[in-house]
Length: 65
Image (cartoon, rainbow, N blue to C red; front, side):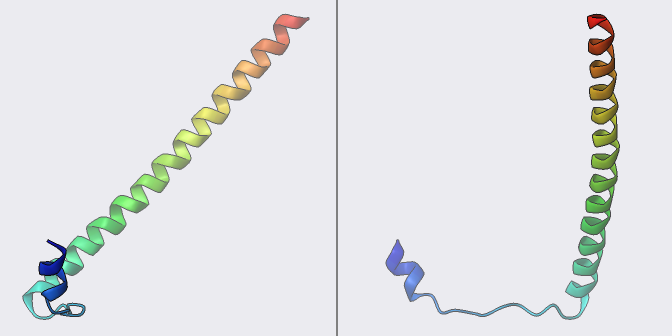
């Protein structure tokens, strides 16, 4: 198996040209949009976790009194 892989010639990196470029740019834009949305969602979740933690700490400190 390894011999077959080693026999194959290295083709180098592919350069996007023509109609393939349009699809590539579209997929790239979709990926960037998903990443941006994930970052926004992560910020919201972090804020919710922080609020939950503060609430429980406040509730816990109130019981000790």
